[in-house]
Image 1 (cartoon, one colour):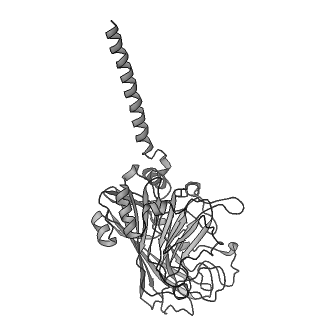
Image 2 (cartoon, helix red, strand yellow; image 1 turned 30 degrees about the vertical axis):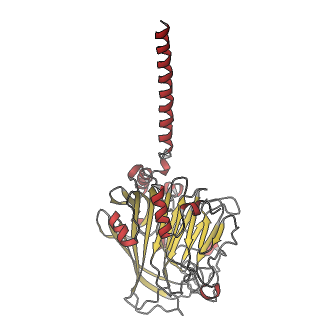
Image 3 (tube, rainbow, N blue to C red; image 1 turned 135 degrees about the vertical axis):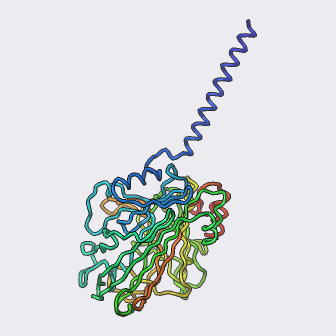
Length: 413
């Protein structure tokens, strides 16, 4: 009898321990899943579909959601299908309200096309003679509310276009066409076009070829104003995300400073760090600040790493060697309108009144100023890549593309 009791007690204990282990294992599983539906790609894709027409481009588990009505911007993407992480920041409150705003409709999106300059004597955001203050600042409709037309599409790529007539702050008439082709890349295409080996990782990578064509009858010249292609990506912030930008070595007097942080005032050392030829910038969405990389310093590569979610995000663009004339978007009449930066990054934060549109952070690239004769065009090609999975493989990619380890990025601050 005692022997039977002992067996029963042992069985109960063993069963209880197994039950505890199962709970622990289940809990562990759940913590690796995306339980917040607003962070899932499928939720955000379906949300957008309720409010605006979308085009979804796919390649196996990689997918992106594009909205033609909003200048064919990529709103968000996934490396793991509908249940995967949604990488782009989306302004759900504004979209759900269904009401257009003055000045700008900041719908969000992880890759949108803008044109520069924003301010200065050749601005396309201010009317001729108006003071450079917020009340006079207006995003042109063709960058805000005017739809782009779908020209052609396959399952993994789409071409969009729009014909535009406008004038700049100096009164120079501008007639041009914008074409934008977006393609979701396969694993082989990622290797061939970016040299990144995504084998063994979960990934989404897409290429956008953004072209501006002078459709007028006069050449675009510096003395009357030039345009540039300006790409902005808005992403979800986190205290664990650090932006990393490699820069070219050299003397400041010859190729400019490693980083320009004079946009909204100096950024404190606990948020911005220069270590050799690398810039580290916090992307927590808690303090408003913007940085720029001068064209002769820019490598055409920038990225961010989310150490909590093990997500490496990369932006790669081909910048022409030696070109240093980039438009300046400062809100003032400028001594040198072509002294702008080639790469930018922005961390959102509360305004003085405590309000905040985001939070989000941005990675931005620009083309050189487009001095085009009638019929000529300028293209700006950009790759947006999100990688997640095996930490050692991610580290290999980071070392190859950004020149620093994930540990260096995570421990920058």
